[in-house]
Image (tube, rainbow, N blue to C red; front, side):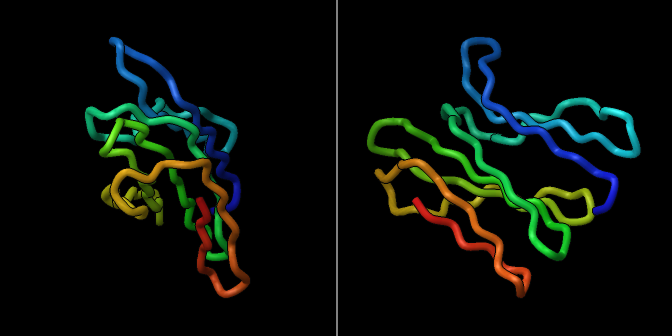
Length: 108
């Protein structure tokens, strides 16, 4: 969406690592949002916008045998539910690449 900037980071609050984001719209910062919703640690967020204006966000849940890559999509200001997109027990660095057709490739 034109005039909108997102910033994402991992942060530790109350002893737990999570992914947070904050949006700047028309020159004003909105309150931060916690974007990882489970109790598992969340690290190394990666984000990219596609040609349709959707924001894709992915991160690692590095918790032992339950490690995974998790993703969400923000469209028209609303975030999708978290989706696990890697096989169980698999958590590696993430790369995102938008396609000209409006899709997104995610590598790990």
